[in-house]
Length: 133
Image 1 (cartoon, rainbow, N blue to C red):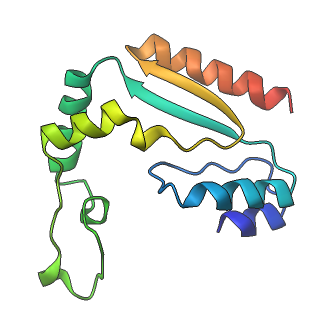
Image 2 (cartoon, rainbow, N blue to C red; image 1 turned 120 degrees about the horizontal axis):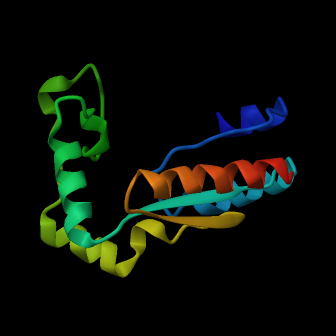
Image 3 (cartoon, helix red, strand yellow; image 1 turned 30 degrees about the vertical axis):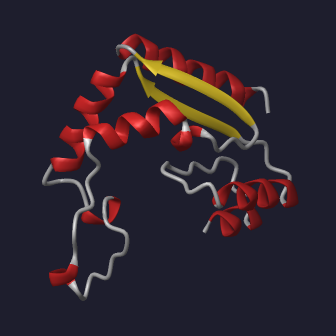
């Protein structure tokens, strides 16, 4: 889908997290092939406890699609769906190792989500980056 957007020369293409590390080479290759400038935006909670609170609330929400926590998803086989939720210890290990945030394509914008003001400032930086292109 990303490559199709680039083939059409779409002006702005936004791709949402999460990504597997194996995607990094694809993003680099396709953005280079179609000459796209890339901004990787990484959003962090201000501390681990806040991250855990947000993650557990989100993952347990009835609005959360099971695909986000399941190793495989087949909508025709709903009986076999299992939610593979992370424990607090697992998430802490992931956060401390930085394994979720190692992917970097293009320029990086790191945002520490402390409050609404920090998000507005981030959008301002993104807008400025877009206007420079």
